[in-house]
Length: 258
Image 1 (cartoon, rainbow, N blue to C red):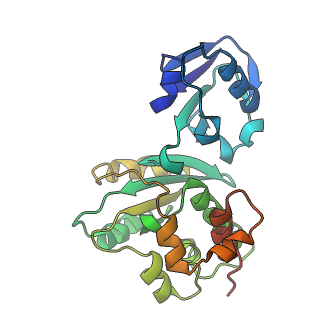
Image 2 (cartoon, rainbow, N blue to C red; image 1 turned 90 degrees about the vertical axis):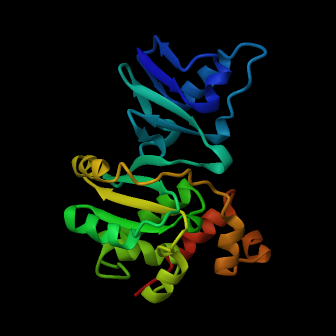
């Protein structure tokens, strides 16, 4: 049996928040088709283009995407992506590295001090905080982190630490002062906390940050990002992709060299 948990607006399509399916194995692609086939007439359709699917708590895009095989006993969560992917907290894996993202609401907290303290208390984790409005959406974040992890594995990082490399690549610059200005922590601005490492270490830090004020991080940042990086309509039109801005930002991050 496979358990499907329906979160947010996806519950409206089935008038339930949990479905127990007597299926031993199925791919995510076929599961989506099956779920669409059992929606009753009069019920709202499932917006399959704007959902995140997690298997046992891991984002399927960090597994095998729609080809991910789900087996009996697995728990599948279907999460609608509001405004292109809003979240207060999300977890996934990149190259066997666990990643936790948390939206941090603007406040009078000393985030720089908190960041320094967390790094000292949890030296086995990679911890970085960037301004929320520099992240287009979850996929943009994943692509940048994948680029940084690849750079680390090939000894081509822009800095001596992975945390600094991540900041530089989100800011699309090789200069740390410029990166801090473009993407670093700013007083009374929403932030995105990025934590990477072993799952056991991430669980430890979650207790330490549980009182941080949370906020949904959405993808309503396209205008800010285009203005920040001087991205023109002509430049976007030249990108042969469905996700033009997202892929252009990732390309700029990848083309940075020492």
